[in-house]
Image 1 (cartoon, rainbow, N blue to C red):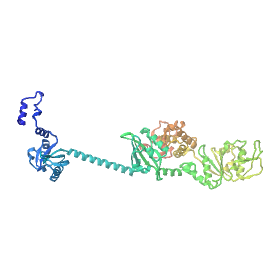
Image 2: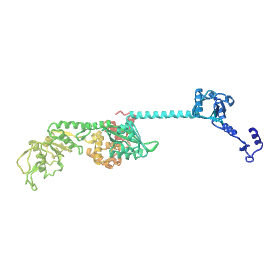
Image 3: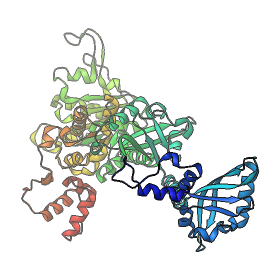
Image 4: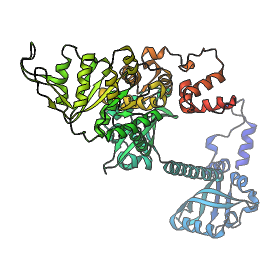
Length: 594
């Protein structure tokens, strides 16, 4: 009984096991050939068999759908019909016959001439005597896979090119970049970062940044603390890098979270060595000995110091309390030919009237009760150098007479002695009083005033040279940081605006104390308004230290700030507590031309 007859008979006699489904022949009624034919025809892969002469003998439905040929069109024809290149087909079958099989990608041609790729797995077929009678191949169309691979390869190339372009751009911008994983281990280090840190990429990879970067313990601790803060509270950290080959860099480091994982960090390293060096040079130009300032009044003071330092004339230094009169006296002494001799300071307001003569001129043993030994006075102690009489306006009148004689005769007489002693002392005097008014009141000798006022230097109050406040505040901040060891790096714009707006009745001394107060109170690396003394916080910044009402219009406030800052737009912006860009926009909006 043939296969078709068996199938028809089975259809006429439905199986009891499947009353609701199509009829199915019993398994014992199928032979191996039937199974093979069913498998070949139902396979989703192309199955093509050729004989020893490379003629197509088997061509399943999947092959028909893929190639576009009907089975009858190809049976008995050369298999080269199905290859894009006949030579490639000969090579494939040659390998299959020689080696017993072939596996790999080949190029095929459809009936319409279209070329496509397939993956072929072919093996030889043998008869019962072991003779090769043909090749059976199973293949699958991989054209879409090849196209996908090509697109992926193109994307990978584009990504690699973008990465290379980004790194090149960062290196051209002199911007160092470092990336770390969740544990702080370095995963990327740009060429610029390698140079600034003195590290090789290979040696740094996989190591914790805080263990290999060449910063001191204090700078490392500041960076660690900054990395722990929320992103909106982070500021740049200035550190000093010393590389193994002896080079030094000043680097500002900005720490950001990796957008893909906030536990990872991106460090941006800005080389500010040149800016730092220029800033140091500017500071040096703005500093004359221990005096700090680059305003016009201070430039005049520096020139006057140079002028009077060349001569030995008596100098009267005038200025409010806290303006730095003693610093001027020390600068005159340091710039003079007496710089290697003593500099002696006397606070005349602190001298007791009963002992002032003894303290200034000295005394002989037994000159008065308690004089148990000869005593050298301050004039003798300063012999060859400079004697600075601070607050000379508070000197008692009897001592003014004795001082006048010393200035005229250049000699002193100790109490209890009659022998005069020659002295070589330069006198520098200072006062916060208006001595001409004291003369009119009878509190100060007119002839002494003329004697000590041969040359005079006037120190302007801090409120008249506000442009020096940022420089002075930065100087005091550096000094306080060194003295306290606290990592306070800068003063915020808002806090600086308050410092610029405050009237400073105590002048430079009060400013220094305010900065020290802020450094002690500061819990961050940046001084903010809340860190300043309460008397400064009580001043409303919008009043610009001129007493305007908060209801005054915007244009008036702009003009008032400019007037207070003497036309300096940067200072005026700080007075208003806004950025310079915002200040310029407001000027343009009101058509104000400073």
